[in-house]
Image 1 (cartoon, rainbow over the protein chains, first blue to last red):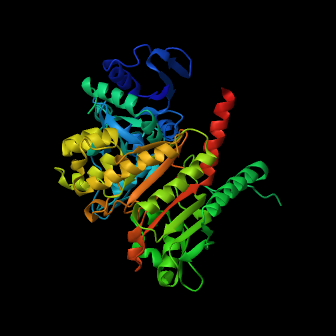
Image 2 (image 1 turned 120 degrees about the vertical axis):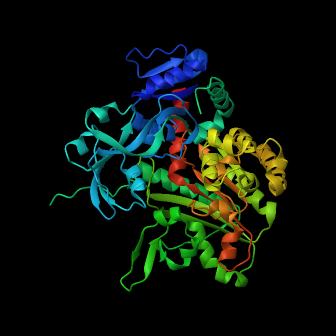
Image 3 (image 1 turned 90 degrees about the vertical axis):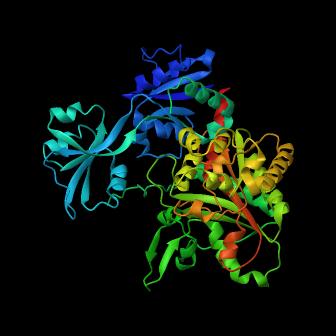
Length: 207
Length: 327
């Protein structure tokens, strides 16, 4: 039995659609309150976790594999294998701010984000510096209400930005839902995992 | 006055049963090493930083706890036994009778990000064999490694074997201007970037081995030797799953173009191996050949060794017992 961790957030539908297109998880019903769902005919056990917890569960081998956003992996890199990324549900990690925001060389600003480690890497080699203000949500409010001059956050359609007079100053990275696999599990279940990855590739739902 | 019993992140105090269990595991391993003719070395927890400056990579530098002593000397807490042993032995080698069979036990202190399962103080035992050439040394050290693992974990053991520089030929041959990114992609088994840069590496990413040994160029002969060694060890240790997986050690390149800036704590330049016990992706031990470490320290001697994390071994053994009882 192999254990798969699925994310609760925005990547769930994307992940389910990809697996189903590959003929996997067809019997899965996430409607109930069960924390651990078994699909004996497929040899899979599915658990539903918050995005940010998935790398820890997979690294410890509690789950053999999982789906998690590359934005989260950029923060918690648990030395996981990342064989494929899902095609659908892509977004971007961007610096956002008010149109009037100025990031002049030598200036020091405040940068609000849920991604402090990524932010530190983004700031390396910039002509301007920033104090990182770590927030847990509604990050786009920070530049809007002047808690920070800029924010580093996920942009999907950009509609929220437009509606709030914010602009995308710079795209820092493309964000994709990634299939992550525990190193020890990969060695143990290599044939089965490679078969699954092969089916996802054949269904053209991964890149 | 009320005092708190809290400890700094990443360290633990062991009392009663957990202390006894760890000490017993350590004693079993020590008895095994002594029985195999290995003699103990006791090394200090504190050393000068200077002898290691040239050996440090970005990652190993980041792991070091270092500080300035009262007399102005830069010191560091021991983060790894092997370089410490090598730098102490290199100037003395000509006066010592080879081969040397040595073992050690003690703490290594490494800075780790605060995360579950990542300790900053790790209790290790390890063994080093110096002065025995080629496969004879590798066979002896791997047998001792496998014996130690088998005694501590009854099942669920996997040992992955590879060798440094195995993929150098393929990586440097790839259609990419950024070989370091390709190294990272192979190590994480990212199929997309690997397929685009070097389709011949895809087989290594999927199965751990190239489609044809010739794909490895000059390293093909090393693979043949490793396959033979693996087969021999698999007969002697049937309960351990022994696999050769060159992608697992993609970061252990030998060509400077493939290692510069990668920042791995890696001095291995020949056979390299790592063991997993149970489900965790954190290895319980590992080792390999590191002749070039001595070479960089001005001494010429073949060297192979390994270390084991006693806590991780115990954890894996306990989980196994719980599973067995649950059945």
